[in-house]
Length: 169
Image (cartoon, rainbow, N blue to C red; front, side, top):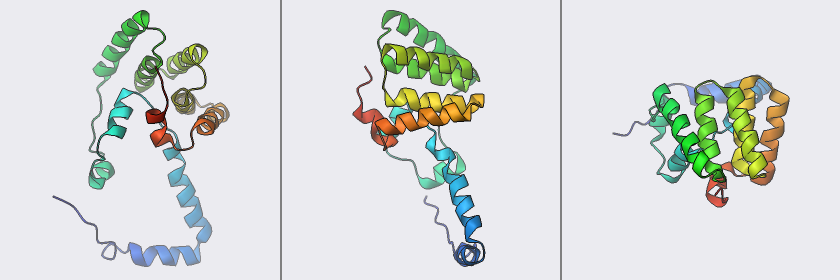
C-alpha cells in the first residue's frame, strides 16, 4: 500500500512561501541545519548491501522502518572480525566492519584507533576518512572531524557511489 501526502491539506503549500517572504534567513538556516548531519556517513558491508539494493519506500525511511542490529550482533561482529583480521590483515574492508561495530557500541576511541590502523596499512581510502570523520563527531572533536570529512570528499565528491568505485581489498 502506498501512502501519498496531500501537502495542500497539511498547509505546507501555503506556509512555506509565506515563511520565505517573511523570514528568508530562517528558511536558509533550517535548510542548512537539516542538511548538515546528512553529510556524515558510516561505511561497512551493511551500508554496501543497502546501497546496492533497491531503495525502500520513502514512507519506510521517514518512519524509521529499516533493519537495525542489536548490541549482541555488534559484539559478535567485533569478535568475528578480529578473528578474520588475524588471518587476513590486509583486507581493508574488515577494518570498516570492526570500527563501525565499535562505534555502534559507543567505543568511539577504539573505532578511531581502528581507522588509524587501517590508514597506516592502506592509506587514502574514502571510507576510512568518512568513517573517521563520523567517529570524531561523536568524540566531540569537530575541527578534526571536519578535516577527515573534507579529505573523504577530496577523494570522492559523490559518496553514494564511492564504495562501488574504489577497490578496498
